[in-house]
Length: 248
Image 1 (tube, one colour):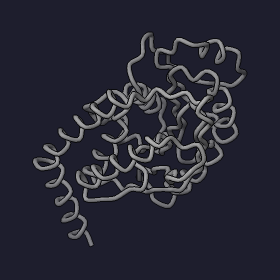
Image 2 (cartoon, helix red, strand yellow; image 1 turned 180 degrees about the vertical axis):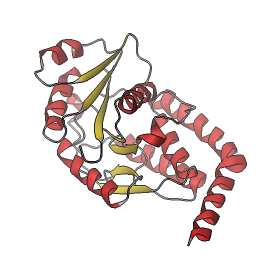
Image 3 (tube, one colour; image 1 turned 90 degrees about the vertical axis):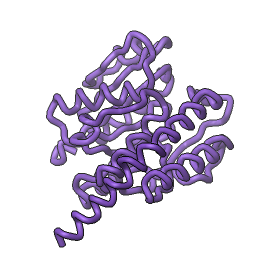
Image 4 (cartoon, one colour; image 1 turned 60 degrees about the vertical axis):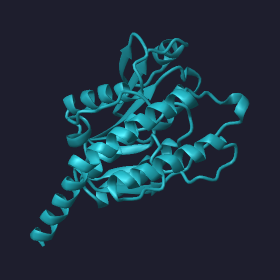
């Protein structure tokens, strides 16, 4: 991580009960961690203050959305001189011990955006998750002429030369899909890597996904991206391919 100048960015909203365990797991892999507390109203602040870990914490006074939390984390990482940022959710779904898998992938593919791939068959996996991922994967392929097995995962490794400078259309849950599409249009290599995932039993699960509202926002984003793909995305991808051919 230090050789790559990579850090970890953790956006968090009302996940105080799981955040501490996630951060302790990350500490075993990386010492440079930026936490963005997105207007949490639970005991997240108190739990963080009780930790002995060295953390860079950004507090939002009100909830602004995952996209805004990621933007703030990326900006802070770039200001501190990092070149890459691993993102991992604070709900305990992901295994911080899988971070080396993402790091190995970017070492083999410098400048790539590495996307953790969870697979779609797991114990306790909510039925809506599988549908949401298939829905997102389909539209991603329409926008980019490329396929990824998991476009909804929050476990990724971003090159900050892209993520910290990119202008985003969205600010909430759907921002992660937007980032993948924009990266593909820019010609950034997208590398999927298999990662593990844990879904707790329904009675223990904390989810901030709002099916009707968030699907509406994702659908609106996909409509906008379809129009942008015609006037910008497709021509840019064709241009990128021509440039690569001429360089060979």
